[in-house]
Picture 1 (tube, one colour):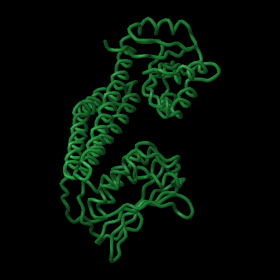
Picture 2 (cartoon, rainbow, N blue to C red; picture 1 turned 120 degrees about the vertical axis):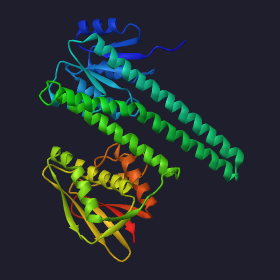
Picture 3 (cartoon, helix red, strand yellow; picture 1 turned 60 degrees about the horizontal axis):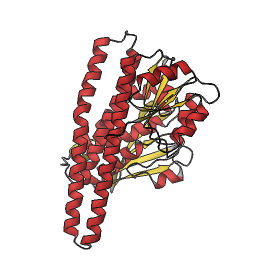
Length: 380
């Protein structure tokens, strides 16, 4: 018999708790009437699969509870749906920024509530299954490694099987994702800019675009790691590549209230690259620089050449990388403290592999004054 999911209900209004308890009667439920009790219950084993969290509470409010849970390695993966009467953009964005997965407005719409709860629980279940599969794969690899010892050919066969599996998973993620992307943009076109839900559709588009980029990046990494990506190089003017990448991020830089400028770029420089693949690396580096620069700063892109190599460098004036971050930059899910978040470790890993596929390298260093410089180096 399948075990019921466990949901923690957090609201300082008993009437709301009663309503939620009735609607969610088919699940295991825990109740907290304040933030302090919510933190205790969330940290107690067995931990909840989902938390419905009221924002406005006396003492520790929902934002603080969410922040504390996301700091704790034991609770940071528990999905949180905010319960709120706030509908202004800033309040909702703040919730997403500190780690919430979704929100439900009061008074509750029954169908909306049940749909969003179901969606989050399905994601939780999928993660559990994927984790079990990963553990199983690791056990198989470990067992074979011990048994085979120096039998490298068989070990390589297992590694290839794992890469095939990861590639299949990436493709399976993209299949439903493509439908979501198309539906989101169609919804935006149908509703138009003047619709009262326009801002929420925009937030949905941002989330979908981010998920699509993550999926594509993961697939690129898998293909490069398994040597399944066919590199198709041709000569490109460095200036054209730089211009294209800057133009593609113009809207994002305006949202961040800063400029991306082309610095020193010799129009005669040509680079032998797989254009699509190289642009993915360069755009991810520029995007990262923009994201962690301050407002009204500038991100500069230069293209330089000497006898040995050609370098495309991205220079920002942000806070730079911590020493710990510099030591862990290219881990697939490495995390630093300030300069980048959990997704950037993946994009930098992809950039590193893309440059390796071009017989080049990526060099990351802090500037002597402030900020950082990321260089994509292609050997001539």
